Length: 149
Image (cartoon, rainbow, N blue to C red):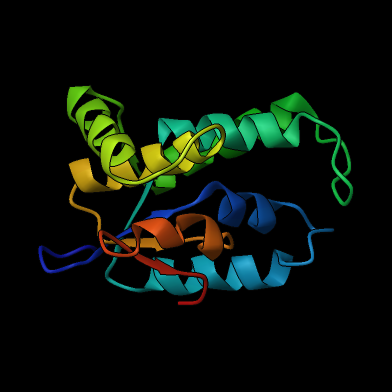
């Protein structure tokens, strides 16, 4: 049960993907991370962007991923929506994104990472759990980036 003192934690797409793909090298680790977090008093957050990235990544060919039926992916995405708090994109997220892009050099695919950080800032989420800690290191003054909990 989440209390008012619970910390908010944002889950990056790669954690959710690794936890659902048995052939992923991080499958057991990701499942353990999610289990530990679900037992904690933390609020676990994702965003609509994370759900889109999840579907996008698992519907294109991957080295270690067998092709999932789309119905299974949609079921998993729906389950994630029920289990985690979903941050909606809205004007404050966009304003935070513009602020970040103006202050912290990034471009191309890095804009997606900046949007995750913008979402976190807009919803007062301080910690990001991701396997791509390097990708988010430029934002370390604004959020805490971890791969292990």
